[in-house]
Length: 239
Image 1 (spheres, rainbow, N blue to C red):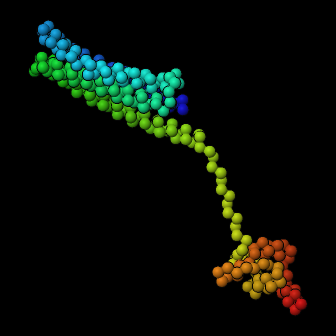
Image 2 (image 1 turned 135 degrees about the vertical axis):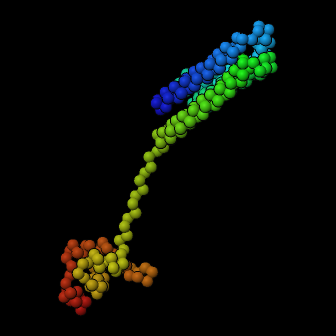
């Protein structure tokens, strides 16, 4: 289980860094192009961006909180059901990705409104597209890696808690055999000899479905004691 937790931590930490790196690169592209705009235009763009802060700040804070809480649950520091850890981190990461993408599109909207057709506006558009695609790819990468890990951990836990199944005893081979099987136990003898043994009560018989069955254990015991000759059988029959 330790391997899975370590891999999960690595994936999520790398994902968080990925979110901020992509956001920083996109912001740098926009600000570089915006440096050519006059001061009054930049002020209006900044005011428009400030108006939309609440739209991306809330999911941003929520995402960071959920990811941190999920990590603490997995590490056993935060007292909560262990099953909440991974879902909290996944939801937190998606909330963080959503906030980053939404922030990029709000910035694009501000530049489009205050500096339409300018290089800064086009850079803001490209930045929003790049951020959105990057966050979607990041979310897909996390799902692709996390859910197989969770499934493997669940199978491991199930197999560890599942009691060992008792081997069912093999059914005992029937002691009653038909005439063909009985003769196979008496190599070199014929059906008349077998019936003679039954008449002497050396071998027990019973009827089932219109067939005569012979007790194989009796045949083996008779063989061990020494099979009687035909003369002995005839002598017994005369008595």
